[in-house]
Image 1 (cartoon, rainbow over the protein chains, first blue to last red):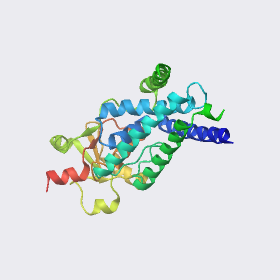
Image 2: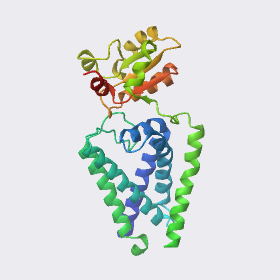
Image 3: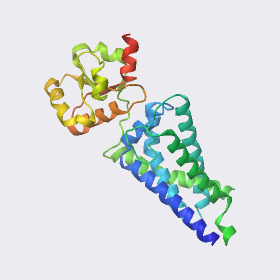
Length: 138
Length: 136
């Protein structure tokens, strides 16, 4: 039962990151504006982030499924989520209305509470997967 | 632990391949240089500039850069012809919205480049707020 739940959670998180990455990878120009809008990075680094980050999400999302690479993917995704949360909180503190850009560009500012809750929920899912390795469930 | 680090490095490298390809060949790849300019620079271009206000009509009505044309995504089709009438090859379109963090100016600039085919389209850094600071 636990093994089944673990698989479902891993599958869900994997699908979520592949979906989020694919949406952003479809329009890196729009995503670069979203990254730039956080006012943390100058333009050129924002461009590199906009080109690289979606593919890192897709690769890590896909790597969650095979047993041999899931730990590495989990650590990377957890690190990414902590960076996303830090950027979100930093934007909030500086009074910047941001479009999250998390699932591709909407062009409209998001609701801070919703974005925070979503990020925390994903982080919690990742934490569960990290703390309960697949092997432990047989 | 070394195995985990190896796998992490491998995933990081794997993502580099499509990211690099996207940077070179993606039809929607971002420009390497920022399209933003500061108000002082745009002003120094004088008559060459066509100011485009990407804020909602109500905000435009309550105040805008002198001579600016209103063009926002909600009324795109109706607002575009006046801009095309004012445009000439030597003109530079400068789009602005409310503040540093608004995105409407980027969206409008993007559409003017991609859909309308205008080459010289820039975004005013800080938008209307920055303009007001310069012209209190």
